[in-house]
Image 1 (cartoon, rainbow, N blue to C red):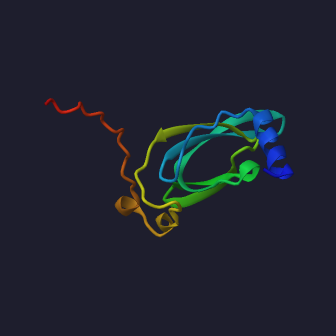
Image 2: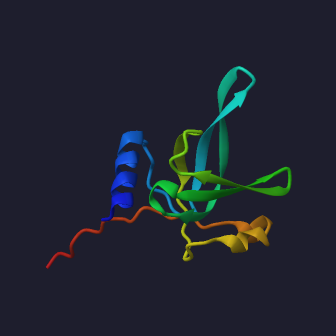
Image 3: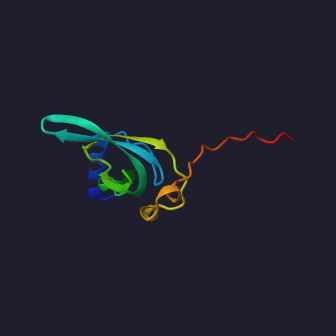
Length: 126
């Protein structure tokens, strides 16, 4: 590891953020800190993760949701102080790392199959 990677790792450890394990296709609820005048509140932004970019301290992800029939995408920095929380609501079963094709789709064709937890099967009796 070079010096920059060591400094980034120390900064990530110092931030002490609780980031759940999520991937493209997952439905997440991102709690965003919003400042309105003197008031500070947390706004929930729920949508499907269509992209995740892992670059250490500069990691980010894009969340897409449909609001009033219009597609809205928002890019979040993973270690930003504006992010209060990230909660995984539903796991999606996809085969691609970037789901940009969802931009052209709407309705049923934009649905993502849910990833079901794997069942543990008992060993066959001999």
